[in-house]
Each structure stands twice: as C-alpha cells, then as structure tokens.
Length: 581
Image (cartoon, rainbow, N blue to C red; front, side, top):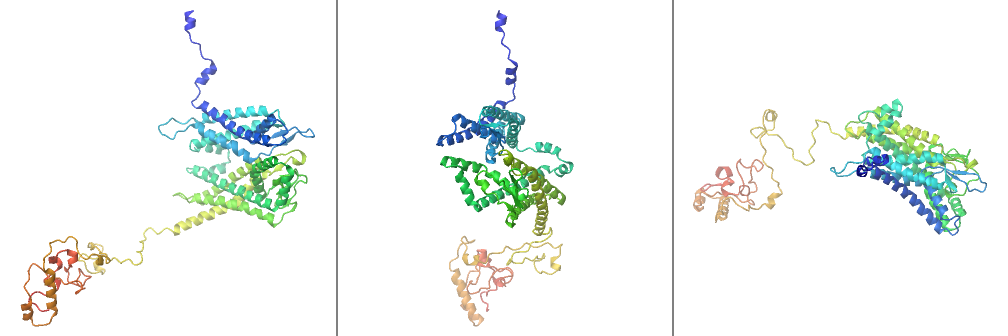
C-alpha cells in the first residue's frame, strides 16, 4: 500500500511532448492566433457597423457575422459561392479586393517578426529558431482560419474548400515567412536554395561572390518597375473616371438610395482601386483585360460585355470600338517603367569599388525582367476572377499574357537603358577624376613660390639643382597687420627717457646743410649705448631684408622691440655724430 501511494503518476506522452517543446513555440502559436483574430475582428466591426446603421437590414446579426467571416476568407484569395439567388443557381465570386489582401499579409508579417523575440541587447536571450517561429505562427493562424471556414459554411456566401486548402495556407506561409526572414536579418540562404529550380543560364547569371548584391538589385529594380506600372495604372483609371464622370456618377446613384448603402459602395470601390490599377497596367502592357467571356478590352480594340452591372469603376472602361492614338499612348507607361528598372541596375553596377562588366550588367537586367514578369503574373492572377456564370465567368486581366508582356517590355527597354547609363556613369567618373601624377594649380592671385639655393640667392638652373637643399623660407608677414601693430605691448628693454627727442634733433641737424665742424659742434653729446633710428613717417624705406631695399641686417623698431637692435652705423645707413650726410 505504501509503495503504491509513494509512487508519483507518470506523465502522459502528450504532456511529455508539451514539456519538451522548443522554447518560443507557445508564444508563436499565440502570435498567429492574435494576427488572425485582429484581421477577422476588424472586418466584423466594419460589417456590424454597416448592419446597425442600415434602415432595412436583410438579415439579423448572425447573417452579418457570416458575411464578415466570408469577407475575411475572400481577403486571402478564397473563392466564395453565392447560394441565395433568384434562379437557385450557385454563383461564384472570385475577385479578391487587393486592399483587403494587404491587411492579413501585414498582420502575418508583424506576427512573424514578434515571434522571433529577437533582443537588441547583445547579452539578451537568443532569438527563437526560424522553424519554430514560422511553424507556430502558421499553425495558430490556420487554426482560426479553419474555425472561420466551418462557421461560414452555413451562410449565403460559402467558401470553396478547394480555395481554402490552397490560398489560405499559401498566404499564411508567405506572410509569416517574410516576417521571420526580416527578423533574422534577411539571410541569403533561402533565396539561394530557391534558385536551384531555375534554368542553368539564369542560375549562373546570379551566382558568384556578389550574388546577394545582384539578387537584391534585381528585386529592387523589379519592384520599382512594378510600382511605376501600378501607379501609372492608377493615374489612367483616374483620368478615365474624369473622362466618363457623368456615367460613373449615374451608376453610383443607381445602386442604392440610402447614405448607408452609398457608403458601403464607396468602401467597396476603394477596396477595388488596386485591382483597377492592375487592370490598367495590363491594358498599357498590351494584353488588356476581359469583361466577360469573349469580350476583351485592349489598346487596339474595346469590346466590353453589353449587360454589365452598374458600378463606378466599370463605367470608366473605354468605349467600344477600335483604339485611337489616345489609347495607344498608354504604351508609354511600360516603357518608362522598364527604363526605371534599367536605371536601378546601372546605378548598382557602378556603385562599389569593383564595377560590373557589361555581360554581368546585362545578366542582372534580364534577371530583373524575369522577376518583374513573375510579380505582374501574381498581381494579375489575384486582381481577376469570376463574378458569375456565362458572360460574367471571366473578369480581369489574363495573367498568362500579362506577366510575359511585362518581362518583354522590361527586357526591351530596360537592358539598353542599363548599359547606356552604366557607360555614361563610368565616362563621367573618368572625366571628373584628375590624373595620378598631376599637380594641382594654385588659386588665382596666390604668390608664386620659387625655390632658393643654399646661399639664398638666384633662381637660375644652377641654383635649382636637385642635389641643392632649399633654404628655409622666412615667415611672410601679413601686410594688413602693419596698420594695426603700432607698438609692442611688452618691449624687450625698459623705456629710455629723452630718446625720441634726441632722435628728432639728430635727424633735423642731418637734413640741414652746413660745414661738418659746425654740425659736429652743434650736435649735443648722446649716450653711445643708444642708436638713432629714423621715424617711420620721415623715412618710409627703412625695413627689413631685401624687400625694403636696405642693407642686410637692417631692421625696424617694431620688429625687434629694442632700439639697439634696429641697426646702427654702417648697417642702418644713418649719420653718426660728427659726420655730414
């Protein structure tokens, strides 16, 4: 009895697995559940708000919740089936509003980043492993998606189980994977492993030591070209809406009467604006789009279906008939987008210290065309779909033609642009770089410095021999300081009283003509220790060095600060006592 009561109960296999689970798995699962709940809750609040404000709702709150769940699945690309029709037939609804698709993708991206739990502190805990974070977010998100699918299956808008099993996991895997990849610093290994499925020539074009730089360049250039295409498509839609403004306004007022219904139509139109931009981009590329089975619309001809439902965006479709020059002008948009892609490639080719060669630049430009084709194929597939049966079974651009057309335009205009811009940048870099042994010219007005010989004189060839060392140059004094420096603040010797008077008297006597003996007799005796220095205002030629024109060794009182050092006797050139000038 004691042995049985003392024994602890063993853990079940499930409890053991939960105890030994990798760290961070529960947090990753929670992040996936929260991301799905936020997206579903946002649409639920919006639909319930419209249902409450509607003056005559068709169903109760249960129907509004079913519609919210169906819209959440439609935002992932899942095709819906409408059952409550007058004829009793099931009508598919497969056009996914791309603005709604951005909501779950962004939430999954944020959930993947948070699931890694990467700390900015180097001493902090390590981030959660890639597979653990990725798997946790995807499983948590798909759990909520499965519950929403089961709940939505009993309403008028029912999801297609084929679309649920394909598009919902694909969006979850892609969004969460992008978030985890960015949290770990965008490692290139996943991309390099994915490149193994490409053909040999394309794989060799992106291989090498700088494969990451070339892949990044191709991705950025393709993204820029796609942005130009879709942005230009939005401008085309806006211009067509203005051109067909009366028809668009009439269709908007025809759909509903109350302000609640008009607000719902306005929200639906805003959610479909990105789709219309992709349609317009496909129209500019050439394949155009289809408004019903057998009714294509492209720059060369327009043949929309005759019985289209009234909707403002459909009112902006070009009129039926052959294309005009105004329709053909839309072809400028893909040409500009391809040139933008080529400019991105050329800028990356000459950015680093080692410039890309012509062949490598051309290879990256072609890789950009391939990536751009893939992006437009994906966008065209998401932007279209069926809106019913018979004539409404096909709506949107043909993705199997839009992608190759985008790649062809990018290769046709992007490749020459990349090569020309690269050559121009290299030529400009060579022209703006001075030769290696060139000596820069002195600025205008600067004094010419000539080398001196050892003796300090002469500038001829013999004085400038290479084996003759240059004499140290004297410091050049600023001539503007001569006016400001009137006297020395701290003289070398104390002031001698009467020195200035003696100097003035000697100068006046020297300037007066007369016999030498009278001059000598009239000259008062002075101290031999003092020297006579002419004043600066009476003898402006007194200076220092060769520039002043005086014998070598002469100086000024201002420069030496001592009257004895100003130069006397023969050196200074001033009259002595008992001499006649």
